[in-house]
Length: 446
Image (cartoon, one colour):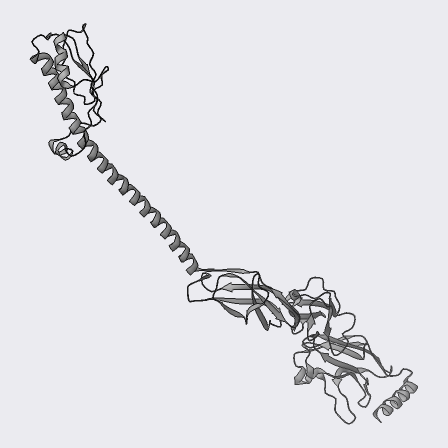
C-alpha cells in the first residue's frame, strides 16, 4: 500500500511540475566486513517546484512509522558521516558491527510540509566476518585447498592475504583460495586470511592438521649404556608422527623375532638394539644403539690380570731356582779349588825344597818354572774346610831338563800347573835335581 501511494504521488507531482521524484542507489546489495568502514551512496531528483530542505539516511522504513535520522540514533553515534555533492548523497559508516545489518534509505524533506520523499527500497547492507575453511585433516602427500570464507560477496575490490603462524605465506595469491600441493608435515600450522578494504582485517586463525607416518625415530639410553651384572639398562623409543605412534616393537640386530614391545624396553644383555614405531599411516625403524656388559669387561680384566700374575710368579720361581743352583755350584767349586790350591802349593813347596835345599849337588841357580792357573780365588779357611770332603784329582807331572836357565824364581801362585814330559812322582823329582837341571812341572787339576 505504501509503495502504491509513493508511485501515485510521483505521477501526480511529475504531471504537475514536469519533473518526478527519483532515487537511485549505486549498489542495493552491499557487503561489509565486521570492523570495516563502508560507504553507501545514492542520487535523487525532485520536482522543480519544490525546494529540498533536508536529506538524511534512515533504516528499515515502515508505513506509519517516524523514520529517525541516523545522525540522531545513539547506536550510530560517532560512526556516521554524511557527504552531499549536488544530487549525490553518501553515508560513511565506520566500525561496522553485526547490528548494522539493515536496509538503508535516503529520505528527502522539502519546503512543503507534506512534500517528502523516501527512496524505497534502499541499500540492503550485510555484515560478515572472515573465516578460513580447511579440511578436517589432510594425509601427507595429498593436495588441499584453503578458502577464505565470507557470508556475502565483498566484490572485486577486496584483496586477500594469507598467513601461516602469523607470518605472510610465501606464494599466496590475492584470491580467497590457497592451494597446497603435495602436503607434508611441514605444512602443519595455523592459517588465517585478511582483506584490505581499505583496512587490513584478518580472520581468526585455524589449524591445518596433516596426518603422516612416524619419522625421525630414535632411541635414547638411560645412563652410560653399560649393563651391570644383575641390573638392566632402559631404552626409550621416540618419533615424530601424527597421530602419535601407538605400536612400538624392539629388535636385536641379527635376530628375526622381536625382543620386546612398548615405548620403553629394559635390556639385560649386551648387543645392538633398535625399535620400530608404527601408526595407522605407516612405520619406521630407528638406528641401532650399542649396549655393553660391564660384568663381561670385568671378567676379561680379571682373566688378563690372572695371566699376568701367573707369568710373574713363573719368572720369580725361575730366578730363585737359578740363584739357588748358582750358590750351590759356587760352594762346591770353591771347596774343590781350596783343596787343589793346597795340594798345588804343597807340591810346589816340596819340589822347591827337594831341588834347592835337600840336594847337595843341585845348582843354586837352577830354576823351576811353574805355571799355575786358578779357576777361583783363594777362599777362607772355613771355605777350605767345607771343601775337604770334595774329591781331589791329581794331574800327571812331566819333568824336563833345562840347562840354560840359571835363575830360580819363586813358586807361582797359580793353582793349575801344566808341564810336558813323562809322568813322575814327587820322589823321582827330588832325585832328578841331582843332575843340576831345571825341572818344569805341570799339574792339571780337574
